Length: 197
Image 1: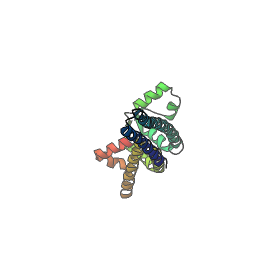
Image 2: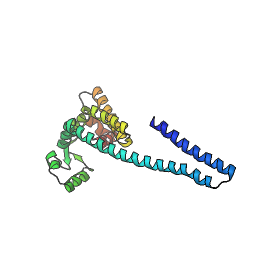
Image 3: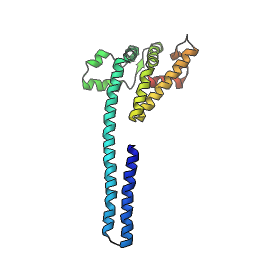
Image 4: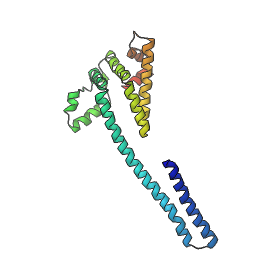
């Protein structure tokens, strides 16, 4: 409805400008050129204000999304975080270490987390299973990202949900095997694992 109203306003402004241009063409009154420019200036101002308001709303929605994500991680994904911390070889992270860290230390930890290493392949399996257990969280987060219009986050959630689907399919067909062992045999699948977890 808002978009329809906006289109009506835009078309009206352009039409008003066109009418004044036609009047100028018929009467040769130069003042009509100045009058014709007014609706176009208003149109440009409307675009600028709308872009500003849209950017501001987007920043506010992203901030809200960050808080929602924080709540999800605290309440519904605690087991995933614990499993991930237990499996890490480097960087050595613990919840208490993060909790007591200063801002510069947190930034350093985040930088170090760009290159992670797990203790063993087998230690990665519980992390993968916790991703599967948290499927509803990823789906909810995907829906929120879609509603808020965050394409990058939406794509990340789709990627994770595809990964979860791969794991579940493997588990159904191989109930006595570990997914991580299968991933280790396939370079592309292992890259998917490392990209996800």
